[in-house]
Length: 422
Image (tube, rainbow, N blue to C red):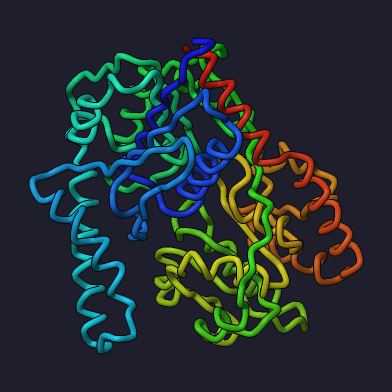
């Protein structure tokens, strides 16, 4: 296909909110910047991601866009939701009217998510009607799309990205964990190439799914290092915060080990005279306020913001003094590691193999701790606050490290991976 345009369909039925969605959008932006006219990308996704964020149309060079329409009312939603999104925050409307519109949009979002997650293959049936338009299908988040019993076999090469293997090691997914394990096994049989972002997860998957190395590829990720202009004061006022807190961001799932963060921070506060609060942000983190806070005072020692707007996230990072992640299952570096390094914030993170693979064990880039041990986190916090000079040195090392691999490198690696299956 040396002189022909390579047509890549990018199908994302669920669009996981947070890091996976950000990964997909940044990768597509990089493809548009650097792939040239030899490639064309057609993005297919729904109206909302799994965190209820409205997904605007993508308008980029070399990229076309289409809504995934499933169900008899999908065309109504397709027309109505963008209009609702434009007017719901309008100051011209009374507050009560805006609230009614937000509630109605939430209802539409939940209806769409319910239909997309039925596991009946309706999204793939919709995709089959378009498959002849592509030379290659890429699925950045293939979960919850295959029908439970029917066999689905595409007529073009398929590349997928498998992120973490939390579904294999935890019950984070609740009642759908067992079906998801089965579905991922089927995807590993269907796919021509499976991409991972750490050697550790790739090697685990090779063993679990009996994958030959020739059908797997590891591509280390990198952040988009463009500096954003943010108004920190607006975000701080919105959430009732002052600068200098310890920050953690993400869905409050079991594999994120939020209990280690709370208990370890409580131990630290009892042992130290450093007076900084711990701030959680992300879906379901508001529920932490109903759990055991180990004596921490809500609104003073501990803040749980729940879901925060995308345009507030950079400001929340920049206003923090330290970023902490205690996750026990990730694809590779999570977005917290990238974002902390990118904005020049010290980092404490769990010592899981996916992280240590790139961070090393010498504490030169970040301090690590056992995510199952609150005492280990307490010790890491004591070490961090006990030596500000070393903390700053780690920040400088981390920024040099993160600058050594660009998003353009990631994009080029993905394009080479795509071309390898054609």
